[in-house]
Image (tube, rainbow, N blue to C red):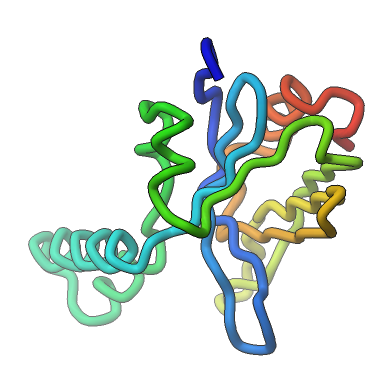
Length: 160
């Protein structure tokens, strides 16, 4: 689409594909639609290795390296990418237009991190003509209000 630009991303959005299987996506909002960019295995492995190496270089041991790999963000590079190249990147990538989306709900939730503290994260629920999709992120990035504004700029009253 001519004039289409990326306006923001929600990184590390995971969707359950079965009892123990998930797929990781970056939700890329453009000026006209939502792109679902599936994280490629080679990209995930490269980012995890980079994070582990950086933690090791800073003197972190096994647990520090493991923690660093858990905090890896997938998707910020899409902010500078042309939307059509994002769609063509992986066969699992797709797009939803405002005509495809009945409702889009972005909620802030909290989960126990195992250390007696709660970690905020986003739950993005999309009811589309092709079905219902529920994504959960690792953290609240971007903040829930910013994510809703970004989504509303594309999908208007469908955002809740």
